[in-house]
Image (cartoon, rainbow, N blue to C red; front, side, top):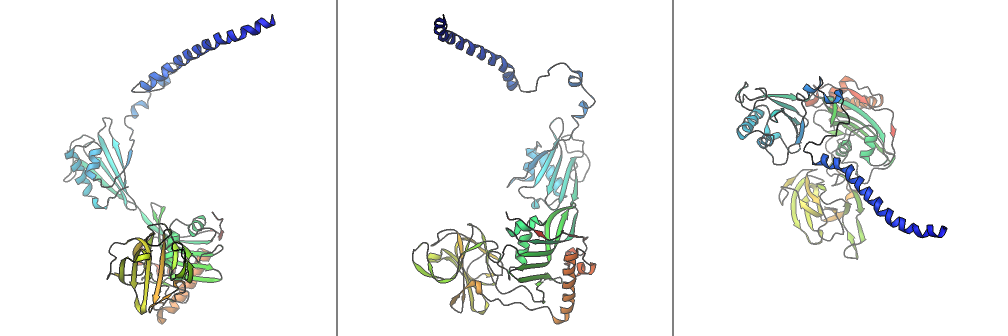
Length: 469
């Protein structure tokens, strides 16, 4: 008996399995019928489970839905004109030109650039009701139809009666901030973790570019203190203004920089200007991959030979600054150096910049350049194993190590103003430590364009020891 049951089991499975699959398929068809109809519907709405007067009957809020102003956000495209924008938003050619003319009466359309954000508001009949455009750092312009939203050009308002245009400039204020921190990781990361804004590291590099090479002189544990101007738009941080005081301590060496007077010149603690004949580096941020030597194994030629420069590793297209003012004597291809720029300076100095990807606009033989001008962009042309800049310096016909170049300073503060500078420096240092800056120090350090702005000193908390990335 038991044996017969075992023999019938395969027959039951052969009959039951197809029947189960048929039932499953039927269930899937029935369950997906409503879903298929939902997707094919031009107005797919979830089905109402049961009649409910609070769901299906009009309420007091129903009439407000048509009156709701819901903006549609856009960005100005590259090469797109304002007239094209209005036509894209549904205005006819005549209406678009009228709207453009109305906008041009309150705004210089040449200042518009790709990426500017604008919002469009539409009426229930899909006609354009109003238009708002934001200019980063300047303000916001709002346009509304003076005829109540009708598509004509009637109404009031000068030569373009169809639109009412209001310009709302952003409220711009400035405040002084003091910041202290310790370097642990990159300078930019350390500043941000200490509470400073993005971009402040570049301002520090600008101030100390003659004394610090930001590619090799910064070490973990270095301390920094700054007093700088923060620009606010509508009460929110927007940009970094001028740096008025900067102290950087590295390897038992203290670097001080103070902006004194209205000229924008920075001086060290003794009143000597920081500006020198040569910058420490032709690149703002990079790393040294090879130094000056009389015997180096060439990575391409596979032989030992002198290397009369310093190699800075950097991605293709990194801007190259001329390290001193002078006259360009050569731009072009120079055998193994690839694309090269050479500049002649006072005192018998010549600087050379090798392996460039391209030259900056206007840089050609005979053109005059100022210290810090962008003259070219890094590359990997010539005999180069990778993208980098080979920077060389020649003095009276002989190559010298750029890293040991001795710079000549500009004139110091006149003796008649030296006492005032030293007193100002003392008060600024005390202000950075205490967070309280005397009003006379604010006036002494202000440039003419910012003297009338409201200044508030906001200082960071205790010095921050930061964590590496």
